[in-house]
View 1 (tube, helix red, strand yellow):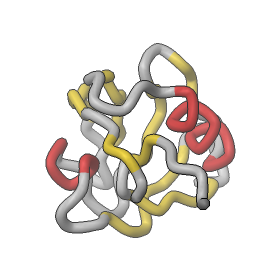
View 2 (tube, helix red, strand yellow):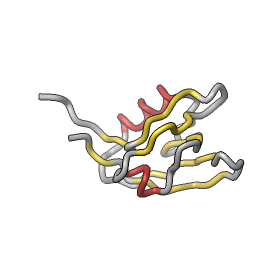
View 3 (cartoon, one colour):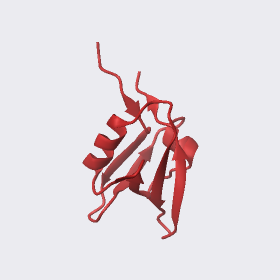
Amino acid sequence: PVPVGPTLGVEAVDDGKPGARVVGVHVPGPGYSAGLVRGDVLLVFDRTRIDSAADLARAVAKADPGRSVVLTVRHRGGGYQQLDVTPGVVT
């Protein structure tokens, strides 16, 4: 069997500076439901600073599916926002 774990339903890459830039959002999915869009840069996931896409993957892997966490996001236009997201389960 394939192990299952929490997911945000987004694809992210290194941004060249702190954060993980969203390059894909799965519809439907937890990230989409929270309001994430392509071009957003994830900076903090549940009080964990995100410096790279690998940091984001590790933070999401430690999350409890079904428990809401707060993301700090920098939008492409430059504004910052905190979003509540509930990681789902990969099936």
